[in-house]
Image (cartoon, rainbow, N blue to C red; front, side):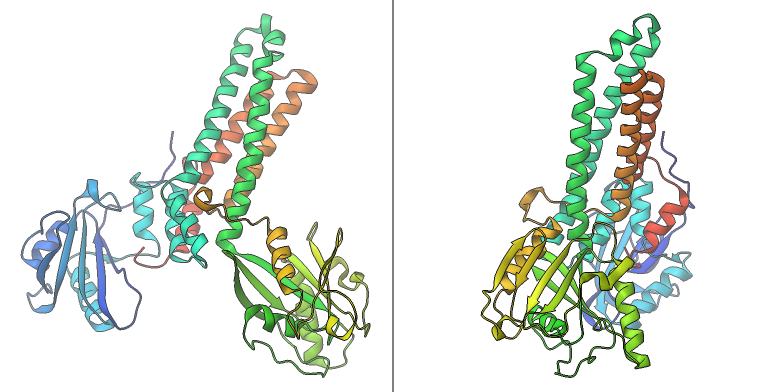
Length: 453
């Protein structure tokens, strides 16, 4: 049973196009009063799903603009309720006049993400699909856009549904054993049951791997560039980003704050973060930059530890100390090989050591490939979908419940405990699609959307 919250059936309005001046601007109206507003603003309700040339008028009948009107009855609209779209000339004054006209006729201005929220509440989209709307709009690469479109079409939700069905079948088997206590041991030792458990275990691993890859597609992969002062961190940032983003001099301590640049590596969005060189500095501003560098490392997906291959001023990785996140992958990048006889490229796979020259570009292709490998990124083509951190958190909690139940079965044949943990796992998975969710979670999710979507 769904615990989707009730909401007021009022009518909302917002601009569906970005603010500013453009050839076309769209105002969207959704709610039960949309047909009546069409009569007031257009003179009649347009034919459903037919673009109709109309004059747009305010509540007093004064003309505002002329453009195309589109009307969608509730069953055929994005939100699941009557929707009126006014496609006029793009400009802030025209858009404001049209919105004011709708408000004077009884609408209220929409909150961020409220149109998508209504689509979810009216069962036009599940929660993962609704989030994919925002992911598609905010895609940073073409592959991320295609993956978001697959999530919007229901690919991620379908994968979650399949896993939920497997858990339900397993739970039915276990509860059948509980209903026949005199045969419980035989039922719970049945090979078919153990095979189902193994299948669920494998399904969790597969979906979690796909979701993590989808999270990287959506959020990008954050790579922190750290190392001693004057090791060539800023030169590497400029080389990888293809622009002079950071000032490069021979003076140690030039970089005093965190610099961020985004690059696209074969569909993988990578955020490169250049940090102040790690050293003891009496300069107050540089010292603050170094402190920020150490803090930035805590949220890293990966660390590039830049060293001077010519042997000037290198220190061990222990300089980062406890700031390193648990299990964060680290690549030792030996820069300035143009000053040595060392060959560029991968030198050691475990731990990873790469030789490069930020001056000549030698070895940087191998570095790009290594970043892709660390991110677990590969072009998944038509099989990719986007995911969010909350999805992965829900998957991990569901998997933990599953493993807790499995352990109870294996150690003490506790069928009741397994059944309860399977129920909790099913509920955690339901948070992904919204079959189990709370008002607070919905408010947080949709508040991140743009107004008009």
